[in-house]
Image (cartoon, rainbow, N blue to C red; front, top):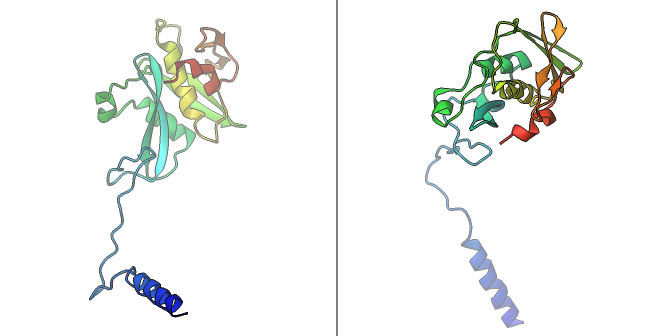
Length: 182
């Protein structure tokens, strides 16, 4: 019985020494900096919402997260994509295939975004055109509000290239460009 009492007393003394020490006066609580999904620190002033854009590197579509203060509408997300990569993103080797494409409008109905392009008759075809359409489709369908993307010019459905080399005037999804994703 005495051994049990001594063991209990020793355990109680050891446990008592494991507490949080008391400070003589209050101190501010330090909040750690925010980190992104990959564990890297998020710069001060960056927003709390992740915006997903698709740019091009080495002939492949690359998803690029940006931090914004609040969720963007699909049109605002498209505008951010059309503005191109930031200086830092460009330094990281990212480019845009959208430099010669002119988007004149966008509508959204029943989760389908319809992108209106300027008259394309006077524009020479580009070898990276599939990347341009892929950038738009992959960027817009990364939002829950958009399930598919269609393209039109002069109020007519536009046939656009898919990753497999075929042309389509039907609603497109990220699956149509999965072969180009990095």
